[in-house]
View 1 (cartoon, rainbow, N blue to C red):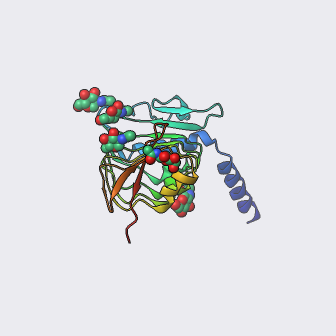
View 2 (view 1 turned 90 degrees about the horizontal axis):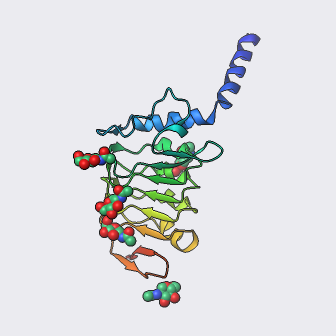
View 3 (view 1 turned 45 degrees about the vertical axis):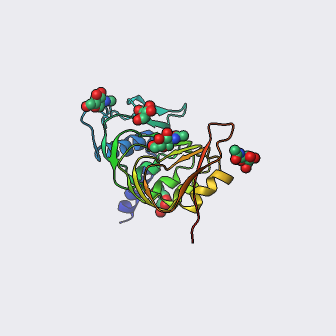
Amino acid sequence: MKFVAMVFVVGAIAIIFADSNSEAGDILYAWKTYLIDPNNVLQSWDPTLDNPCTWFHVTCNGQNSVVRVDLGAANLSGTLVPQLAMLSNLQYLQVQNNSIGGEIPSQLGNLTKLVSLGLENNQLNGPIPSSLGNLKSLRWMRLNSNKLSGKIPISVLKLIYWGNLQLLNVSDNQLAGTLRQANQTGFATTIVIQDMTA
Ligand SMILES: *[C@@H]1O[C@H](CO)[C@@H](O)[C@H](O)[C@H]1NC(C)=O
Ligand SMILES: *[C@@H]1O[C@H](CO)[C@@H](O)[C@H](O)[C@H]1NC(C)=O
Ligand SMILES: *[C@@H]1O[C@H](CO)[C@@H](O)[C@H](O)[C@H]1NC(C)=O
Ligand SMILES: *[C@@H]1O[C@H](CO)[C@@H](O)[C@H](O)[C@H]1NC(C)=O
Ligand SMILES: *[C@@H]1O[C@H](CO)[C@@H](O)[C@H](O)[C@H]1NC(C)=O
C-alpha cells in the first residue's frame, strides 16, 4: 500500500518537472487540431519534434519560451483555443487576415506579457472578453473586421488610460453603441472609444 502511494508521488513529480517546451508544443499542436489549414502552413507543427521553437511561425526567446506566434494571412479557418492562455511568455499573437471563427477565449486575459493581439480580419463572433482588460503590457489590440458583438468592456477601455495600449481598433464589427474615433496624437495612436450611453 505504502509502495503504491510512493510510485504515484514520483510520477507526479516527474510530470511537474516535465519540459515546459514540450508543454508549449502540446498547446500549439492542440490548437492545430482546431484549425483548418488548406495551404499546409502548419506542416512543421509536428508533435514528435519536442521543441516548438523549431516550428515555422513560432518564435522563442533565449530561455526557449514561446514569445511569438505569427500566422497572418495564412488562409486558416477554425477557432482559437483557451489553451493558448498557457503560453505564459507570449508577447505577440498574430493571426490576422484569416477566416478564424468562434469566440475570443476569455482565458487570453491571462497572457499578461502580451504586447500585440492581432486578430483583425477574421470571422470572430461573440463579445470582447472583459478579461482582456488584464493585459497591462498590451500596446496593440486589433480586433477590427470581425463579427464581434456587445460593448467594449470598460476594463479594456481603461487600458488606454492606465495601461500601455496605443491602438485599439474595433472598427467594422457588430458592436453596440456609437463608436467614434478620438484624438490622433503624435504617435501612430488611434484611440477608438465607445460612447457610454445609459
Ligand atoms: C492584412 O490585410 C490588410 C488589408 O487587407 C493588409 O494591409 C495587411 O498588410 C495584411 N497583413 C498581413 C500580415 O497579411
Ligand atoms: C491563400 O490562398 C490564396 C488564394 O487561394 C493564395 O493566393 C495564397 O497564396 C494563399 N496564402 C498562403 C499563405 O498560403
Ligand atoms: C485564465 O483566466 C480565466 C478567467 O478568465 C480563469 O478562469 C483561468 O483559471 C485562468 N487560467 C488559465 C490557465 O486559463
Ligand atoms: C481600423 O480598422 C478598419 C477596419 O478594418 C481599417 O479600415 C482601418 O485602417 C484600421 N485603422 C487602423 C489605424 O488600424
Ligand atoms: C488629444 O489629446 C491630448 C491629451 O488628452 C490633448 O492635449 C490634445 O489636444 C488632443 N488633440 C486633439 C486633436 O484633440
